[in-house]
Length: 610
Ligand code: ADP
Image 1 (cartoon, rainbow, N blue to C red):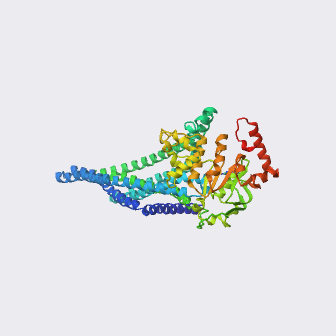
Image 2: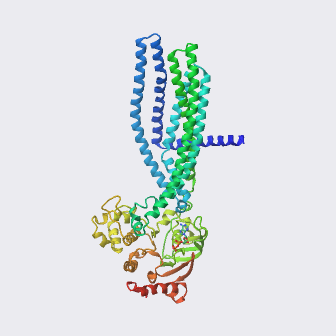
């Protein structure tokens, strides 16, 4: 039992030291980090001087007043008490400003590095809820390596002060050092225990915070405002939020209670120490002719000694507490950033290019069933392909695999007879312009929402605005295509309707001008007229490009060269619309059902279904 707790302590010391060294190395990798450490070390070493002055001078003055009463000596003592802190303060203020500038610049750089790292992670990895929690937890540690540097530098300067004070106390009686050290040791053990409990509590609080996050702004955010009112959801969500907040508060209260118990422990220990010291020093003054000034020096030294020793223990415990976060951070950065980006080939498309799904199975992380179940299809990239199927049949998953957001669990996907993983990920993904079902609009001008990271080209922009029917919308906007989407950044911005938003997403994909367009339910938010209009214009829009259109509405199928019918993750039927329809299988059934719906709906205008 003893051995195992010793091993644990050794391990924890090892982890503390290696984590601290890791963070210091990180600081030293950055030029700003090295400059910061240099200046902060100067400030911290200068901190030792006022400490020593405050311990020695009042006692020396007292001895001089009781003894020789020399004015010149007294003047020197007073001069020192004024000048030393003053010089220290001036140097401190000059360097502190410089340090703050360096700190801010470094934090900006590290925030950028962190965001870029996460943006480069595989989507599949990032989607994992545990990774999401880890990401929020480690961000603070990553962007503030100077915290560790500060703690180490302060620790060193505290050790220097501590050794100076110890030397003063040792002239009285070294046993005192042992007594005071024991009290400090007991206090630091209390702190260490408290830190571990607080860390575990903190983990629970993070977990609860994560569960609360999706509900936190629900009652006040505009996106939810309509549904909250129409479905009378105020009380429903208030109760959910209250329950989750109560759980968090219970953990927070636990923290407060534990802190109170610890404070009581500190108080008792310090009381015992003071009683012992006063009895000892008064005895020395009364019976061993210890000068009264020396008694003051020793009392202050002892107070400083325990303070400094506690600071050393606390600084170490802080470093060991931080080491748990640092280990988490190291673990986060060890997660393979990309499981797919091994290839370096450049994909080249030509008229004969073929994408082939060969015995492909895919299961989402943590899911029981396969979302794609032994998929075998060949797609000639010169075609316009329409993928149809009921909800949940695997159409979006097919796009996720095709665009390498996920990798197949089994089987392989080939482009021109080569596994798609052999191609450079970025170059491969450049082949696709995808309109996702859950596309995002950003609080940027409308035109920037379309151009995004591509080169600006007014001709192309106007072209896609016309093709998608956005041109007429823009004409009526206050700042035309410079109008911001959303009202958070610019109160004069607009909130596009579902249909307008979808047109913007389509315009964005067209502007990217990739050889393969993928549209996943591109018209779900459009009214039947606009839907019909978009499909009719679709041929012109995509020009010579390959198009993969995913839809559960069948009004688009007649425009495509190949229709693939998905069911339970399999491509159960494929061929042209005419071939499939005459086969009288699943496709015919689906098509007739929808045609029936439109026929019976007098407001509908999708006559092309008939
Ligand atoms: P479709 O696009 O045809 O509606 P999907 O490809 O979205 O179907 O979904 C196929 C199956 O995979 C469904 O059972 C769905 O619940 C499941 N699924 C989709 N996305 C995820 C995900 N991120 N994690 C776990 N299961 C998912």
